[in-house]
Length: 227
Image (tube, rainbow, N blue to C red; front, top):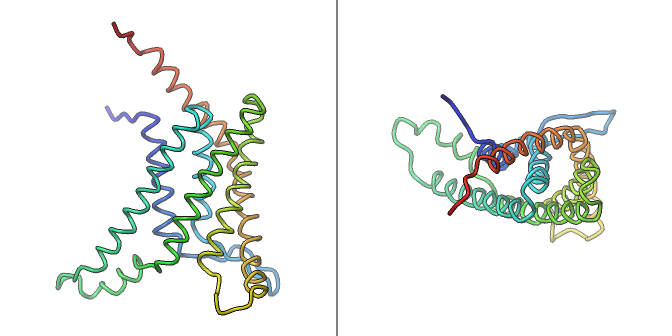
């Protein structure tokens, strides 16, 4: 019989979201256009809010330390994926795959600056999300999950977006005012879009908490006392 423990599945989905965002997030698509105003978004926009949602589900059921452990594990996966991609594109192709080498390299080769910016922003924002969610949960005595989820997500995703844009696209040869104007034009709409996705995904937090708690209750109930 095909069986998967709920906790294992949740962590697997979390790792999928991170790896898919890193590998496929470079593609953007047209999201909205009004006259000369064009808003493009990375395909990772569908996954990033889910990453923070899973963080909140884990905190709600298993506590902040467990969530921090999962985040650290995810960052290790991102780092190893980056290292392996460098190894994979550096190896010479066999004769059979020589014709596709350029396309392969184009897909998996990314700027070191972009990769570093993504890793740093993700690390800081995820730990910030955990900290804010846990603090509000403590102050509100576990009430208003929807409020805690969205406040922590909005804050962490603003930090993630701002850090990434500055680290990846700040031009040292341009005036500070020019940089801030350009970067803010990227940060604001992209952050608002992430906030919208977080609101849309709020029911998933409630569903995820109920789903994971049943597994936890079963595990406690079925545990045998040790002598």
